[in-house]
Length: 452
Picture 1 (tube, rainbow, N blue to C red):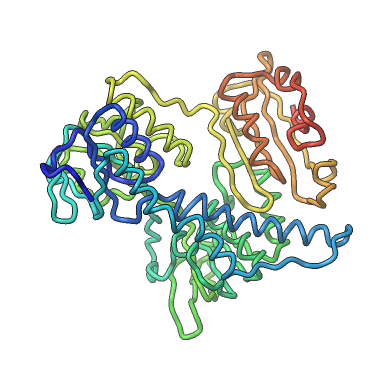
Picture 2 (tube, rainbow, N blue to C red; picture 1 turned 30 degrees about the vertical axis):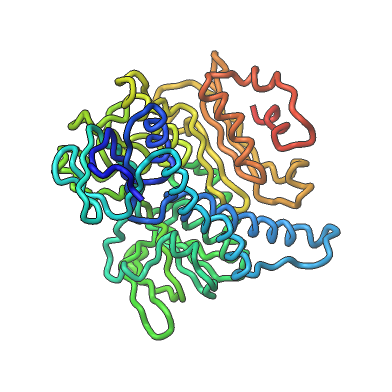
């Protein structure tokens, strides 16, 4: 319950995810009066309908896959996923979050408001029939599934509904070849569902190394997941037996049947109805237009961070980082700038795919001279001991300086080992410096010396 009867604040924060929470708590700790607003349960995407619940399901998929791989090598008995029981376990993480997050705000002296925020003028926000005023505003409203722009798009569910399924349908169609589709398809396949991925271009998982993506796509197909590339969705139809996804491949029309259609074709900033024009806040398709200080380029009283800001990669750690920068600049004037060097990213398929720094093409476009270390590591000890047949790496090392320009990993443990490379890229470390470290053995990290 809000405690400020006047409705006037130093700061209004829109959203309750990683960026919003960071800004609100930092500014409140400095003595500011703060209101926070969200139309959805408090907690944001990552805690409620993204990273955290997804990783619970990924953990189960990993166990099933590891069990399957080891059946010929001394493991007796096949593991299987009980989907309703797994979802119950998943909810033990997500259900407590909204109340806990709201209580944390209240205990800190931050006034929580439930409802959709809408600016009616600069510094004036309406929410659930209340008018709030503030010297500053921070927009951290997150993202939502992008508009598919095809007939029947309303039949496709988003990641939030997929993560609340009480029962897993037998046939699932995934629209788009991004990380959401691949991650959920890998989970569904390990749970016994038939999965199909439709992707409009020849190269799925943009932003990741194409050679390693090719290995992952091949492995994905070997799991009986039907990956259809250069196949553009043209419409979704509901019928008594489920759904029909209509698509076009080249000059040929084709259809795919499914019991459920899931949207994995990208996300868009969730800002359409916030009344940003009334607030004098410039925005575009990628979000609120901000400068390097996370400040609106058109209204200096407004800052934005996270998935709804047109800056940096849209990842949870980046959102929290941007929130720190925005809060520091709100409190002390613009003195901190965002630096996105060496931000790692992971596709949590089984096995995972990870990347940090430059890819080959980008490095060449910059005119850099570098060597490429590339290899399939299915025969390495770290892969053989767990019967992992899908693993590889690619590392870019600059000629002369020896700096690590980029690293791309596929296989068990990639999501952890990539952090060592991320540190190297961010701090400008050389391959020789990485190689000089003494790593625990036998671990996936000890493979680093053979990758550089």
